[in-house]
Amino acid sequence: MLEHLCYCTNIHPGESWEETLTALKTHTLVVRDKVLAASRDHAASYPIGLRLSALAAEELLTGENLANFKYWLYENKLYVYTINGFPYGAFHNTRVKEQVYAPDWTSEERLTYTVNLISIIAELAPPSMGGSVSTLPGSFKEFKADESKIFANLYATARVLDTLSIHHEKDLHLGLEPEPLGHFENTEETLAFFDRFMAWAEGKGLETQRIYRRIGINYDTCHFALQYEDAATALKTLTNAGLRISKVHLSNALEIDLVDTENLELIKQFDEPTYLHQVMIKDESGAITRFKDIEYALDHKSQITNHKSSLARIHFHIPLHAEPKSPFCSTIQHTIDTLQYLHDNPDTCTHLEMETYTWGVLPDELQAPIEDQLTQEHLWVLGAIVVSE
Image (cartoon, rainbow, N blue to C red; front, top):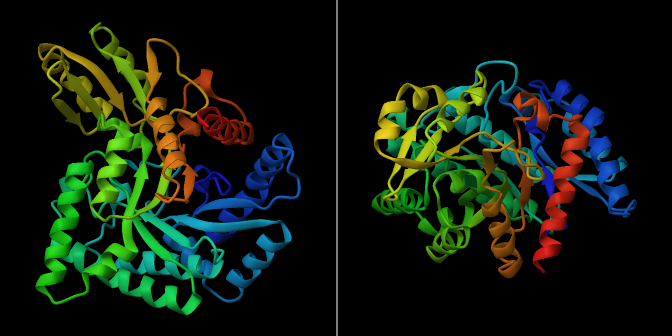
């Protein structure tokens, strides 16, 4: 199951193709050497979970860039089977927040960008593995997106995936990634979205099996943990509904018990200006209150304490191999349960990608050289599945 485990290169700043390739040469080769040395498998090929901005994707498809990149991968015993196509533009050193959802799936820009990524992965992915691209869950709830436009663009993408799959003789697919406050964010909303998608397609006389074949779910363990879902139940429910798990993101959320209401104030240290840190608070009755970001939760402290809330989970990625300082902990058990489920049900998904992208904004006690962090995380995942066997 973990033979092709990779880390997502969205951790490395770089928006142009030249910057992206430089990051791969500077960081990924070092991580590869460290992981292979630790696993004593120096002859093995090493997978890359590629992140390309819209600019980098366009540039990679220009001239001889893609052919040269394929040769560089071959020379260095590297391969690419998945691309993260969620962030369209700049993802570091600038305010991202909810703009990571823009442009959304109602737009031609998102469609063009994703088709470029599919064209790239069709060339790069090993035939035995196929290729996946992950993307946002249609839109962000605040955007109040026109769902018919989302369906039309996704179906157009499914057509491209079908055509290129046949041409390249590879299984190519797109994974929509449910996220808190996304257009759909949990198992229930995901199933409802696909039901509406199928009804839309049937109403237009389109082939619904194309959707099931080419459009699936990018299951992010952080995001589903934030929803307080059980991993095995969620994965089984999604697959029993006929949805494919296109890719699994292994990531980890921050958690803190709010029985002591003074703990709420401690969340402020994670309130940073780059990424969106949704806060999901579950009270004693099991009801979940959602806040768009940490600052919004802090603005509603009286509402939280009046509801006798007991637990908060925060969309702030914590390294898989490390726990934050008490009284904080993490949702690592959801990741462990996901790995166990995939071990017991290996046909569920073979594309696994570690996706801790917050290294640059982590508290000091969790900081380490980036290559060391990524190596430790990779080895932790390998060790976690060995323990479960």
